[in-house]
Amino acid sequence: SKKTDIGAALEFFTSVVKKRAIVFLMSDFISPEFNNPLRIVAKRHDLIAVKLYDDKEFHLPNVGLVNILDSETGKTMWVDTSNKKTIAKFEKERSDYNSNLESLLMKNKVDIINLKTDDSYIIPLRQFFKKREGRR
Image (cartoon, rainbow, N blue to C red; front, side, top):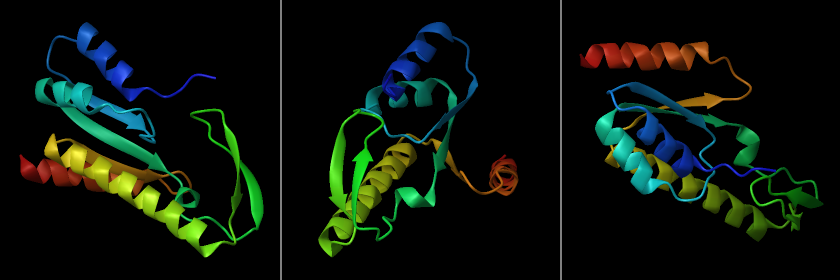
């Protein structure tokens, strides 16, 4: 299986699109480091991050011992979801990752739209475009 590589996608985009464009980057943003390519695209274009997420990614349900597959690495590992330390570590790692991502996007003046996989996308998109319209 192929791994997500946002940096490679952004580098390819930079090499083929020379005129300024509005760019929607849609992803869960779980990818190897992509700071530099993101910075370059954000300087040249109007970059908008559309982050797709599922609440289950942030909270482990207490279901005991489970074998989890990391879709990015293809590796599996056993996780004890009843262990409070395991749950706290998992939630802190996700929280830190999201904070770092939001920091990176804000630092590069990239707007972000958060879309939950089990909710309608209409309201968040409408709010985003209204907010952008108000900035003009």
